[in-house]
Each structure stands twice: as structure tokens, then as C-alpha cells.
Amino acid sequence: MEKWIQELLKNLDKYADENMKQSVLETCGSKCPFSHMPDEKLINLRKASDNEEDFLKELEQIWRLKKEGDKYYIVFDQCYCPLVNKNLKEASKTMCYCTLGSLKHKFKITLGREVDVNMIKTVLSGDEECRFEIKI
Image (cartoon, rainbow, N blue to C red; front, side):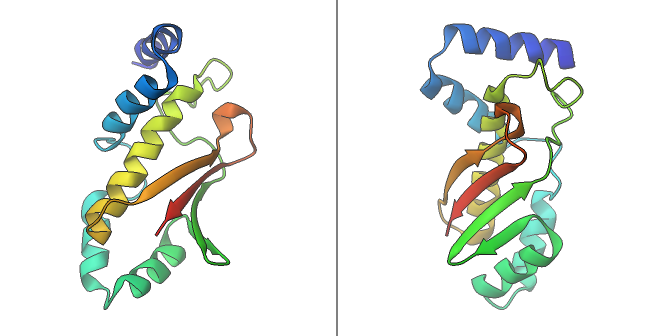
């Protein structure tokens, strides 16, 4: 499967512009089967929280949500995607749009609204971490 994904991404990189690559992979991200925090768990956590602020505080404790000043970030210390992380040198950073889409989906279903997410850093781009700003 990894070889197939690698070939798909290579062809997306070759034939599609950045907007198209982002659109395709973001859409796939909402269906990611490899998420650290399954949708059901997030939804149940949100339902158990008194309000949005309590929900976000709980996410800071149990997930990768970090609040720095008045901004929120999801931070991964490495690439956890099993479709590309076995060979990071050959992996396309296009795959990171999948994570972007997954995060947008997760915050939409738990907060009940569209949430902007910005990809700040990614391991596949050569950074030491993956960092996504969550605009709440």
C-alpha cells in the first residue's frame, strides 16, 4: 500500500497545482482511518464537557492540543502517518494536507462550526515537528 500511495503522491506533485493537491488530500483527511483521536472519542469528550473552553482544556491534557498565549496548536513530534513514515526521505509533503483535512474535520464535528487550520511546520518539509494552528 505504501508504494501505491507514494506513486499517487508523486503523480499529484507532478500534474496538479498546489490548490488541487490540497483539495484532494484535505478531503481524504476527513476519512483518515489512522487518527490518534477517533471521531467518536472526541464527540463523547465534547458531550461530557460543560462548555467549549472545558473541552479544549481537556484536549490539552489528553491529546496534542497546546495553547500558547491566545493561540491553539496541534503539535506532533514526528510524522505518525503509517502511509509515509516508513520512508520519510521519499515521502511527499503533499500528504500533510491529509492531516490538515483531518484536523479541520475533527474540530468541525466537535465545535459545530467550520474552523480554519493553518499548516505551520511539517516533518515532511524538513521541520523538527508538525505544527498546525487551530483558529478557534
